[in-house]
View (cartoon, rainbow, N blue to C red):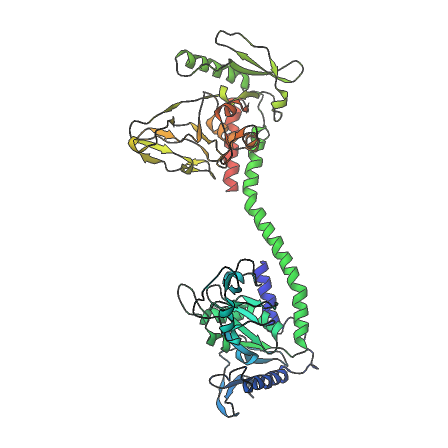
Length: 533
């Protein structure tokens, strides 16, 4: 059972007399109701309350066991007497309990001024529903009206300590005790109740499910349903003996903190449930790029052989003028005789630089048969161009970053495009947004285009060389390990939108599994992600 349902069940039990046992020695509720009527008569005589239209309500149980209501005028003459069994929200009342209309329990039931008052920067707080939606009065961000306006209000619209406020429009049914002496007034969407008795019980009874159901059934309006004052006045409440009320309130006081604690635990569990798929995906990705998701196969061709073929491919592309030779030479990373990792550079003539130890850059250990490489030595950069005709423009919003899928690109005429260059894209390229907070707006270009596709400069466009799977690269780029690298202060530059530049991106170290293992890893990630969805 959810915390809200548990709270409602407890409140309903309380107002039906099922929360605490009855004491046959308690004075019946009818005795207290008689005293309340006498007090209201006194206030009416003093002009501090109004005699109810249609006569005063007196509810009693007839000889047939059904509830009846008679209406009497100011002189005690009976105006009507009828059975109301079809109106009461539940049938059986405990011994000693009694039914009463809300108007019989209050000297005032009214709402705020129906004319919007002139507002000013300070003065008397003027409450709207948002100021009481928590169930407590919040003066921190209220509107204000002048003292003159407040003084002109009828006394029934000036809240007093121990009054009750009740929202009656839109988010109706929120009960708010007035536990302050501070002067304030309120809008017409809030009603004021001035109880003559049963105040603490009334707070809970008005919040109970059966009362809300009555309000909801009687509320009128389309855009914002409203509970009328007439509906409030006619609301039926079951009332306990005077001595039982504090026992009920005491029990509620003990139970409700436990329900709130239960609700907090429930919220935490729901938050955990919501976060679990994402956390699981991160764990799977990190396990995958560290070589822990699938077993290694000693029969696999080592990654070093694959990387040698990629180096040959890069040399061929340089010779054909399809890419530039890397500045400083081609990066080669290897394990030294001391077990530490080193990097050397080899130029176009095969001349090698002195090896440099890069052990402090290695983020984690990798399995036998894997190799470390700089990202720039595994991919081709297609370059940029200024569009000359209509083109398919891919920007940050084109990416479904939850599923790492390419969504809908925008077709743009070259004449309408900004003058700066855009990045060339081809099928099977990996797009990676380099600007925070969009780092996970990444995908593989998995479709053909009818017109030339061009990506925003907010992307790195990475074309994987043969044998290095785009899908493996994509999963690495959105893994926690690469997130840490991309978000590091030395790599993410800028104030408003920090970004990792191409130089830092291509320097990133990538763990490279054997080609066959890359396929197994990608297949396993796909299977697990389908389960987390």
